[in-house]
Length: 381
Image (tube, rainbow, N blue to C red; front, side, top):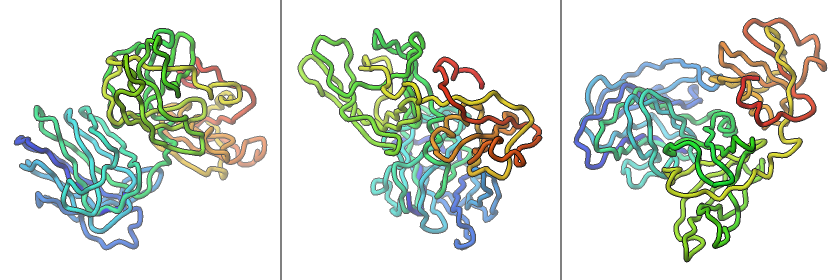
């Protein structure tokens, strides 16, 4: 989103807000005046910290809050107007928020980063990849939980972020029983998370049915659109709730992304997996050829000089594989579990043996022929 202000709003809440820091990344430090962000609390600093985010060293305007903020809405004004695409928030208490940003100081006139309410758990960080870039001068965060006070340690705004296919590696897996169309694990859906659907007994990924179920069917929620292709990126759709008289008696917004071997879903307004029975079928893309195999790890070796993309905070080699699959340039990758770094290469050691050599704390993998059995994905490769 492109804008200049961030606002945190808490309607009807008298309790205090605790904010430690707010960071704003312009990713264009040479062309932007050196002015710190300001807020309606007057706690600010002009320091410019360097932090390693998304494999680049970037600079941010930020404010430091040294006291309690007695405001229903916290509004942070950036030093200029920036094309913001992602907000990163670290929270220290449980809360439910609405996130908006844009050029207006009025919270009601701002655009949503992602529509709906977002449930944030304590001591956790959350990426909000906005549905569109928005010219931003103000960022607003509006809290709805009247039982708890808002307390955050960091808020960061980015013009340039990790590619959106990163969510294919970072999503949460929901387990369902395809035969009974019921959820295996009882948990609440969080508005800022993406989910894949999986039947552990049959070892199959699932997708929503794209047609209304028959009157005799036991399931209720179905998708009123076709699933996207890989090149379509993130698309929006509607989940319909079937009752005894109507195929679409109620609707829920949903965002969909195709990954290489499965679909992932973001539920903007659905909060529980236990109220309704989901209309599923095996994912049509979970077929031979959709799961490229990789070689066994070669510890303490890596390919150099052929890296085209580096991703940080990657916990498992499987996540690196997923990202490699989504870029046609990727033929191999280097992964460090210790450093949590994934480096994707445009070549293999066979093609460039002189670029292949010893490297501590890294392992080398290359894509090969064949497929990966779905069951294997739960273990570290």
